[in-house]
Length: 517
Image (cartoon, rainbow, N blue to C red; front, side, top):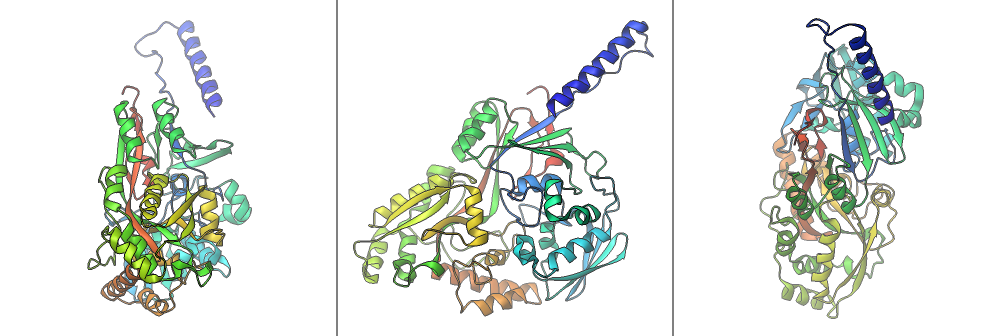
């Protein structure tokens, strides 16, 4: 792409020279300055395994790629506010029906207009038999059908009351229906078309290239976008420092400070998930120590979360108490984090029959989050003080995704988050971390009917009360070591202006690049 841009500029320069030679410059014939195309270069952890097929995952790191190309009906901010995106307004018609009014000035990357038919198509795809393998279909498993009332109005029907549907539908990326039908899933993944601020150009060995969707309803302020795969945090940080990239994601607090010290900028935001050392209880032998709730609680008491949060995150976040953050819907404010109490932890292990401790192994992604590996190393050091040896195996993000989506776990635990992304609904974590998940690592049969009741609650008050009850049970049962509420740290080069991200979604359309720092 860069060669093509250079060639175009060269031709433009020659053309301008000919004009100058053939006629003397006059006020009316002075050559018009041509702005140099601007390319935003972003260092990301990895591209989606399914390339441009947007419905197989809804979280980080894949949304860094998808949200450049695709849009949902709504947009959820860091504070949990639901804003219009492809939908301009919505209302509940009855407990099982919502009406969404749609934006009339949106177009797909191939020039076709966005209408209600695209929403009907997306709902049909996500509700057809067998589509439960896709993460988005599981997230939106309350959908039943959709029908167009007109070009820019659609009725969406649900199987059960969905009081939080407007927030949930920001997860439903809208694809161009005819293009998808012509190419099929795999073909569309290779050549995706959405309505987002950038349109796909090509995949390459190092990432992907995009061009500005200038005909779209929110055209970006730069001409091109390059997403560059940089799996390792040091490479991403060095990329900003050496001006190889303009911004990088998923770095740590100290990395952000390093970039600031070199003249760049740091962007810090909250996530809606908590990090956990998650126990694969459904696959462990019945006599494994982790099946004893006292043991799991002891491990929570053994970790000095405040200490490592200060060391690794500058004290900017706080310990987790449950599979939700305090700002999410259904968070149980009556539950406090396990305090650090190594003596109590040791006594509980002795009571459970493990006075000398025990050992277990955990798979941890080597990259993908702020100080991810370092956090687990400090957890392991704290556990060692009570005689528990936690051996860390670093894995790649694709390996983590295979484990989560397919249940391919070789060890007793793994590191991941309990996320309310992007809906800020605490109950969302249950889609993965409960019996609902087809490859469940924790399944509490006593909670199953309560989770079902929460999902079928007709009112927000009923859903909140049930969700708070579930959060309290998870705290007590401790199917994980609750670690900390997640933070996002991004590093920006000196040319970047107007940067914003919300719960991991970069507002690509708002970013500007200036020639002078």
